[in-house]
Amino acid sequence: MNDKDLNLLRYSLIAVWWLTVVASLVEWNGQSLALLQAGGIRSIPLAHGLIAAGVVLDAALALALMGWPRRISYQLSGVAVIALTLIATLLLPSLWLHPLLPLGKNLPILVILHILARRAS
Image (cartoon, rainbow, N blue to C red; front, side, top):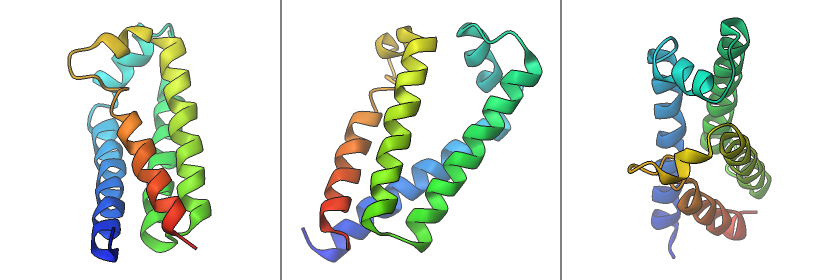
């Protein structure tokens, strides 16, 4: 895999994280809140705090991959993806059966992060 291909993979992940930030903010009181409530989070201030934490995490991951594309950035991104997938699975295991497979997208993301980490310094 050449550098252009690796950059394409990296930029695609950066786009995913920025789009997640935008979607979380646009759907602050919509789907973002509804998902947490469906997962048993009834407190709106707590739900908003969790959404905000997710926005900050996603933005930090995007910025790290933009400005510091190193092995540690990819590895930390992978840890975050695994942690968020596990949390989402605990809250709403039905997301694995959703026709659009919102958690399933994390599997190719982890593969991409693994490839980028192996090739990074």
